Length: 124
Image (cartoon, rainbow, N blue to C red; front, side, top):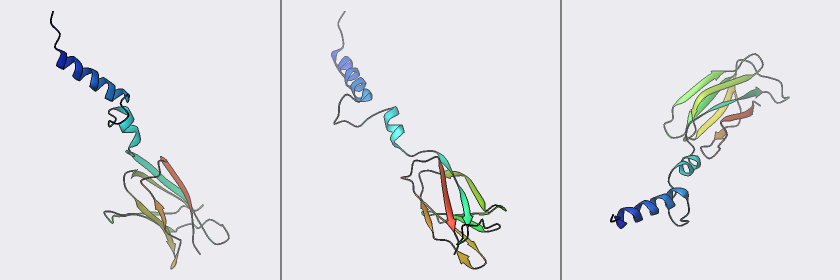
Protein backbone atom coordinates (compact mmCIF):
# COMPACT_ATOMS: atom_id res chain seq x y z
CA UNK A 1 0.00 0.00 0.00
CA UNK A 2 1.36 3.39 -0.99
CA UNK A 3 1.44 6.03 1.79
CA UNK A 4 0.50 9.60 0.96
CA UNK A 5 3.65 11.25 2.29
CA UNK A 6 2.30 14.81 2.00
CA UNK A 7 -0.68 14.07 4.25
CA UNK A 8 1.51 12.14 6.68
CA UNK A 9 4.05 15.01 6.87
CA UNK A 10 1.29 17.56 7.40
CA UNK A 11 -0.12 15.48 10.26
CA UNK A 12 3.30 15.21 11.93
CA UNK A 13 3.85 18.98 11.70
CA UNK A 14 0.37 19.69 13.09
CA UNK A 15 0.92 17.28 16.00
CA UNK A 16 4.29 18.90 16.77
CA UNK A 17 2.78 22.38 16.73
CA UNK A 18 -0.12 21.34 18.96
CA UNK A 19 2.24 19.71 21.44
CA UNK A 20 4.48 22.79 21.54
CA UNK A 21 7.52 20.88 20.32
CA UNK A 22 8.39 23.52 17.73
CA UNK A 23 9.51 26.55 19.80
CA UNK A 24 9.36 29.11 16.98
CA UNK A 25 5.78 28.33 15.99
CA UNK A 26 2.63 29.71 17.61
CA UNK A 27 1.01 27.37 20.09
CA UNK A 28 -2.31 25.75 19.31
CA UNK A 29 -4.86 24.34 21.71
CA UNK A 30 -5.15 24.46 25.50
CA UNK A 31 -1.91 26.37 26.07
CA UNK A 32 -3.23 29.29 24.00
CA UNK A 33 -6.52 29.38 25.90
CA UNK A 34 -4.73 29.48 29.26
CA UNK A 35 -2.68 32.50 28.24
CA UNK A 36 -5.75 34.59 27.46
CA UNK A 37 -7.63 36.42 30.16
CA UNK A 38 -11.12 35.24 29.28
CA UNK A 39 -14.15 34.92 31.48
CA UNK A 40 -15.68 36.85 34.31
CA UNK A 41 -14.61 37.89 37.78
CA UNK A 42 -16.11 39.40 40.89
CA UNK A 43 -15.05 42.78 42.24
CA UNK A 44 -15.71 43.30 45.94
CA UNK A 45 -14.36 44.96 49.04
CA UNK A 46 -15.00 47.51 51.75
CA UNK A 47 -15.59 51.24 51.87
CA UNK A 48 -13.95 52.82 54.93
CA UNK A 49 -13.34 56.31 56.29
CA UNK A 50 -10.02 57.88 57.30
CA UNK A 51 -10.06 55.96 60.61
CA UNK A 52 -10.77 52.63 58.85
CA UNK A 53 -14.38 52.54 60.07
CA UNK A 54 -16.94 51.03 57.65
CA UNK A 55 -18.93 53.52 55.59
CA UNK A 56 -22.50 52.31 55.04
CA UNK A 57 -24.66 53.61 52.16
CA UNK A 58 -21.72 54.84 50.09
CA UNK A 59 -22.14 54.62 46.33
CA UNK A 60 -19.45 52.49 44.67
CA UNK A 61 -18.89 52.98 40.94
CA UNK A 62 -17.38 50.54 38.44
CA UNK A 63 -16.68 52.24 35.08
CA UNK A 64 -15.61 50.37 31.94
CA UNK A 65 -12.66 52.35 30.56
CA UNK A 66 -13.45 51.43 26.94
CA UNK A 67 -17.25 51.72 26.73
CA UNK A 68 -17.62 54.24 29.59
CA UNK A 69 -20.55 52.18 30.94
CA UNK A 70 -20.96 52.62 34.70
CA UNK A 71 -22.37 50.19 37.23
CA UNK A 72 -23.07 51.24 40.81
CA UNK A 73 -23.64 49.56 44.16
CA UNK A 74 -24.66 50.95 47.55
CA UNK A 75 -22.41 49.65 50.30
CA UNK A 76 -24.00 47.59 53.06
CA UNK A 77 -24.20 48.60 56.72
CA UNK A 78 -20.72 47.12 57.25
CA UNK A 79 -19.32 49.00 54.23
CA UNK A 80 -19.16 46.00 51.88
CA UNK A 81 -19.77 46.11 48.12
CA UNK A 82 -19.91 43.43 45.42
CA UNK A 83 -20.02 43.37 41.61
CA UNK A 84 -20.56 40.06 39.81
CA UNK A 85 -19.96 39.16 36.16
CA UNK A 86 -17.17 41.66 35.49
CA UNK A 87 -15.47 40.95 32.16
CA UNK A 88 -11.82 39.98 32.70
CA UNK A 89 -10.84 41.18 29.20
CA UNK A 90 -11.76 44.81 30.02
CA UNK A 91 -10.19 47.49 32.24
CA UNK A 92 -12.31 49.29 34.85
CA UNK A 93 -12.10 52.29 37.18
CA UNK A 94 -13.41 51.71 40.72
CA UNK A 95 -14.20 54.39 43.31
CA UNK A 96 -16.65 55.27 46.10
CA UNK A 97 -18.50 58.48 47.00
CA UNK A 98 -20.60 59.67 49.93
CA UNK A 99 -21.80 63.15 50.90
CA UNK A 100 -19.45 64.94 48.50
CA UNK A 101 -16.39 62.95 49.55
CA UNK A 102 -14.65 60.55 47.18
CA UNK A 103 -12.10 57.76 47.45
CA UNK A 104 -9.08 57.45 45.21
CA UNK A 105 -9.82 55.70 41.91
CA UNK A 106 -8.42 52.19 41.58
CA UNK A 107 -7.93 50.28 38.34
CA UNK A 108 -9.22 46.75 37.84
CA UNK A 109 -6.88 45.67 35.06
CA UNK A 110 -7.39 43.06 32.38
CA UNK A 111 -3.79 42.02 33.13
CA UNK A 112 -4.82 41.01 36.66
CA UNK A 113 -5.69 37.30 36.46
CA UNK A 114 -7.52 37.06 39.80
CA UNK A 115 -11.08 35.75 39.49
CA UNK A 116 -11.98 37.49 42.77
CA UNK A 117 -10.69 41.07 42.92
CA UNK A 118 -10.85 42.30 46.54
CA UNK A 119 -9.93 45.84 47.60
CA UNK A 120 -10.53 48.62 50.14
CA UNK A 121 -11.76 52.06 49.14
CA UNK A 122 -10.93 54.82 51.63
CA UNK A 123 -13.11 57.95 51.61
CA UNK A 124 -11.32 60.95 53.08
